[in-house]
Length: 450
Image (cartoon, rainbow, N blue to C red):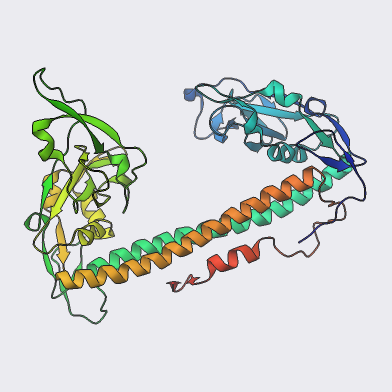
C-alpha cells in the first residue's frame, strides 16, 4: 500500500521534523496541548475492581474510588525504563504521579496528538537518575507541525484503522509463537517417554505421572544412575586462618530452561579445602532446586564454559553414570512428566516451590540403551531446530510489522504522506501480509510443525 505526498512542502526549520506540508503550522507543543503530571496514589488505594481506572507510566494499574481527569487523553509515561511511552485514557480516570496527561487545546484531535508524541520518541528526553524521568518542560518547548483540524481527524481515523489491522496481524503471529512453543514442549515430552517408533510394544511404568513407556526401556530411580552434588551457600563465614579464594559460581538465574545464561556470573568466596566439593565437572546436569514455580527443576548440561566454576546451593549438579547420557537426563527434566513429578514432590508457598535432593534422586527416569538415547536425541534435536527456526521467522515478522507500524505513524503525523483522500470503506490490502507469509509456512493448526 502506497500513499502520495503532499503537492507542496516547506522547511519546518526543525531538524527532527524536516519538511512539512506548506499549509501546516509550525509551533511549540505547549501551543497545542497542556502537559500535566498526575497525582500521587498509594498502592493500597489501587483495587482490582472499581469505578475509575488508574493509569501509571505503563498503562492501567487497577482501579480507584475517585478520579482526577475526564475525557479522552493521551497518557505519557513519566518515569522508569519505559518513560515516554504512549497510552490512552477515556472517561473518568485517575492519572498517577508516574504519568503525564496531555490535554489538547484549540481543537487538536487527541488521537492525532498521541500518535505525534509516539513518533517523537520522547524517551530520548528523559533525565538520567536512579529512576529515569521525563523532562516535561523540555517537551513543552519542542517544535512540531500542525495540520488543520479536519485533516487531523482524517489522519487519526486512518491510523486507527491501519494500525488496528497491523496490530491484529501482530497478535496473530504472537499466537502462532505460543502454538509453536506448545508444540515444542509436546515433542520433547512425547519423545523422551515414548521413543520414536509408534509401533513399539509398551509397558506400564507403574506411576501415573509417567504413564506407558516402551517395553524394552528401563525405568529406575535416578539415584541408581547418578549422584548429586550440593552447592556453595553465599555468605558462609570462614575462620581468620582458613585460606579463602574467589571463584565464579552459577545461580538460579544462570540456569535457564535448556540453556545457560552466562552473561552475568558472580564470584563467591570459598575455602580452598572445599573447592572439590563444589566445583562443576563437564557433563554435569544442572537443575534448579527452587524459586518461582516455572524455575523448579529446569536445567541444562554444563559444558565447562568457565574454568573452575562452582554452583550455588540452590542449583543441583547431577552427575550421570552407568550409560545414562547427560543430554538425555537434561532433556527428560524438561518433559511434562518430569515437571509434574518435581511439582508434586516440592514444598510450595505462594508462587514459590523447592524440592529436596532426595526427592530429585527418587524420580523415576525412563532409560533406553545408550545407542537409542543417542538416536532419539539426534532426531529430537533436528525437530526442535525446525520449530525454533519457525519461531525465529515469526519473531522477525513481528519486528517487521512493528517497524511498519512505527513508520506509518511517523509518516502520517509529520506529513510525509498525504492521506486526505483515504476513507475507511476503501478496499485496501492488509499491510504486512507478505512479511508473515514466510513465518507461517510449515505450520498448520492441525499438523503443527512440518
